[in-house]
Picture 1 (cartoon, rainbow, N blue to C red):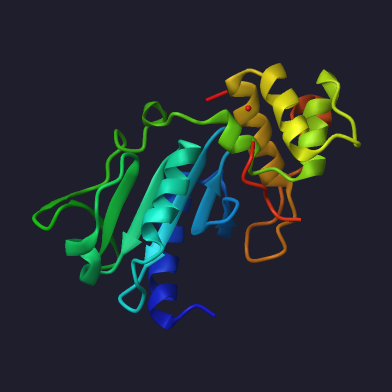
Picture 2: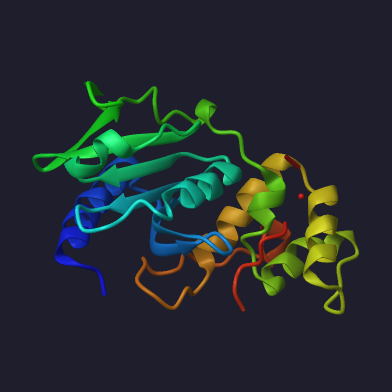
Length: 214
């Protein structure tokens, strides 16, 4: 169960995600296949991830969490309490934010703070890894993508991921994965699923770490 300190930051972080991407499906405790992040905002073609570190947390898992988020290639946010500002190391794609009143302020190091702006969250800062994205899908979701390229129920997950990767463009992979994630019943706190697309539109047990285009 989340502590009061974590919940305090989570409410503000979720509010920020909803204000920036009102069309997104918000999922809590998003599993990247062996590493979990506190928040995910899933639009039709973007996956934005967020990790929360309250004053009661530790940073032990943070490097692995940020590495996993960076491997996906979308935006990643760290929302932290003031206590952790001197201890946070930079990440290639992470946007570090510290609590500031009712919201957050971006920071680099201990002395430079600045407001979040549209340039920082622009899509051109993203470089999605298609293999990593496919690695987020469950076998039935992969099968739906791979059927057009010879995928069958008898195939294992790596084979289905390879067929989907080789048969789809990078943009098609990204949109299909997002459609599957938006439609999935996660079974924990999140927005209601979006309407599932037909398999020809891109989507038709624990996410596996393997995935297709880098």
